Length: 237
Image: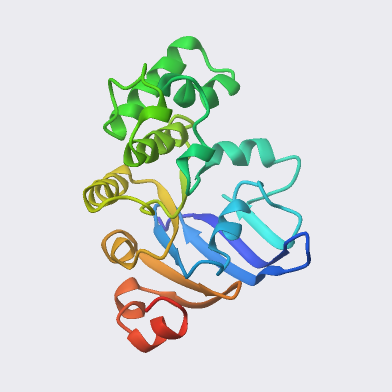
């Protein structure tokens, strides 16, 4: 049986409050279980696109559907459980006194039992190799550790889709390599906004190249990323 469509974006337009266009008719489909990179330089519209996937932004024109459900007020609560968003800066995601509280925050707001919350916290931290860190404060962690805890907060929601904004940015080579291996082992549907072309080559089934708020090319990473003149022309040289 063919995989279902996890994400369907059709002709999405969005402008910032000052009128500057950010997305200019973006269309993209992601199948369940795929890892798709949204590649482009800073300012291409990658982060803005991710913020539309669980309704953080949603007042543009066009349609976004998650497992066939259009993002709208009646569906937004369910969709936010299905699409976990990992921000580029983990300090935007971690705000509780301890790692345990950060990871437990989402499940607590879902009304789960204490037993289920503790199970999810334990399993999510184990998945990102941060077990034993429950009592630590994220404020005193390395940047790479914070990134992993931020991913754990999404895993604890049991979201079938994970959207990650520049997950390897500001990481040293060792932490970057570790995070790529971690994402490879996680499974699930992943949509990764990045300009880290090595991550795309190693991790993703498909890449969509963004420039100026548009998707200008889409296909297998090996083909797209071997065209050096195309990469240069779109700010990825």
